[in-house]
Length: 593
Image 1 (cartoon, rainbow, N blue to C red):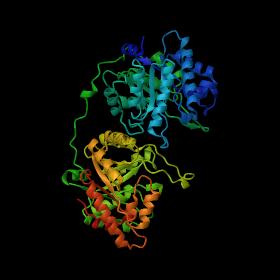
Image 2: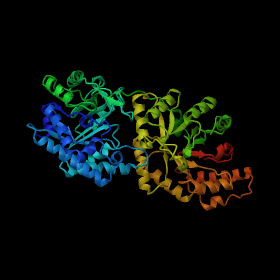
Image 3: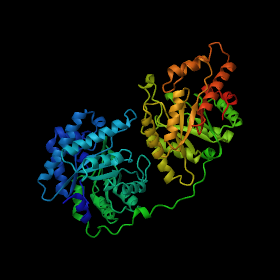
Image 4: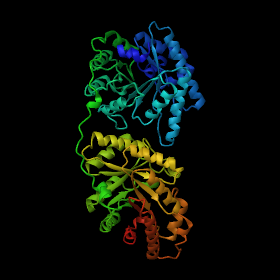
């Protein structure tokens, strides 16, 4: 009987935590179970069989962390380990009296900012291919935080094997959110809307009591099978070891209550040994608790709320061209100069001040805090940049919540420049997110927390990076993630303008074109030769002389900027001014049409 047919008529019991029991087998808390596929074959088979004997009707292959980064393996070594894991699972179920299903277990690949999205997606596909070659037809993605890689992967599997049964499980915290800020409710809605996903739910992160509390508040989707596999509880430190308390009875009682909510499959994650599964399988009243009629999620969507207009975004509708000016926060605590610059910008008709987040990996005053001070001083809207380099998921959420409670409603989301090479031994880039992932996070926060007055956020547009089709593809991903507008790199050349013309014709979004009026011969040469991604042509440098005084050089920079603005005018929704050394006096010289 196929799994989908079985789930239609029965509740399913899965296994527990391979890693927990493997450590007990070897009496070694640091043992990595995935390596056991190659070095401890009999141990892995015995653990699978222990769960089956305890009552598990579905076991997961010992491959949760079988990615190249975690195990430090080559592509070939990884493939061998995954194929061996599936073979060992098949050995284990061979002696089972009843049918036992094998799920190809895939955990999240760590993302640290040094690997491209394409590379990570390719590795996921390699993992799927290894399972498919062994005949795998049930795929369980577990402990995920978002759908970013899952959406293309489930389509990939279905294209390769149309009959495959795909399960997507997510890791929640005690508040019912993933590490990427996605709510349990939103997860179930996406599962409902994704045809390729037949089952999904939650595993890991929380104990059975918290799992029940979260699930009981949710409306389950119609036409999908829902899985719940909580942890045994929360580990405690004991003699330098993290151990889970033995609470099989408490776990089983909560699983019983979870089943009564209409959940289709139950099992365990971290800390759940065969004793947990045995206690659960022997004492659950599955028949009495089997599925009642579910309410359909699609008719349970929350009512639309009235959204307050965003002061800055309204300018796009009211003015022909929007003017955003970037100020660099100071390197030290002396902020008088930047405050004076902000006051001067208010007099020039600037619509919004935007502040960089420690650009080029060199620490400055926090962009959000500096933005708040400038807003309080001037009353102008502000747009701090928030980059992914320096903050982990916890700090990022705190930063955004703090910004919001203090009135920030506009941000620019960027991945961030890498740490300068000379500091990489002592300073670590975080990169828990890239810009698109952080945008999706803010999008979810808007939905869950800021629905009446959401944060409007933009993205960086590096229009000169690679084929224009790829540039547009990345823009569209950002738009899908909720980006309302784009700020470009500085524009200097005719080629830059033509690329922006083509982009604007193909992408329906607001674009603020980057304008950088250079302020000296030295400044022009530095930007041309030292800053990647900005194309300063020779004719621009030749407009300056080494002996020019400050005033003359500023007028040259302003004249060049005015001409570029005129040429960009048919394609620009506004302009994003990057003023070297915060030279706001330039704004009084530049002609904006």
